[in-house]
Length: 254
Image 1 (cartoon, rainbow, N blue to C red):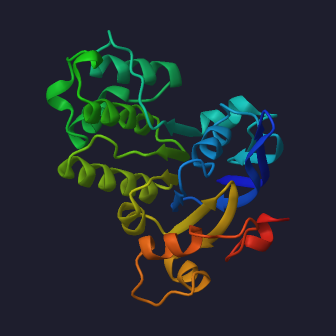
Image 2: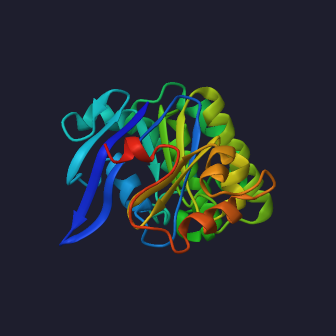
């Protein structure tokens, strides 16, 4: 569903991401992890068409995000790390707007179900400007889920949530994957990624460092079966070489 092939992005002489390749299948949740500045948000923003690749190809559902942007974007939803709701729209009005804009069938029924699932039902008539940071995050997620997208990109989806909200969000994302969505979750919360994701992609200095199941990247990091993702992550990134290694490194370098 999501295909990234030879993707590179350069900003004013700085190489943010270099020669990155990976795929995400329907029903799969991939965790995208890396230190600050590793290229995670650049990668997500390029997949959804906000940024244009310097090189390489990105496709969603078989549609090239650069050459066929409308078809590709119809199939994806992106939730940024900082939501920016319309301050003078209520929670329910946000969802109504998204439903009308994307022609969502039976949007009214889906809105009520989503508000209950994400614990926003009591806030349905509240203006977005009155919501807490965590509630704004839930609203952004609800707007994305309303469309039942084929591809779902989440950048730090649990920011601002309390433990109960985190559990609700984990369950909701898992349900989207079970429905058949291809999901990428970028997060610094490595325990969350370990629990949610079937595979993990480690970015380091804009390059693919490792990609695979936790068992596979443990082998790359030369760690035992009891090593956590945090153990593996630091083994892969502390003092790591510039060139990519790991399960899919050969494919990453073309």
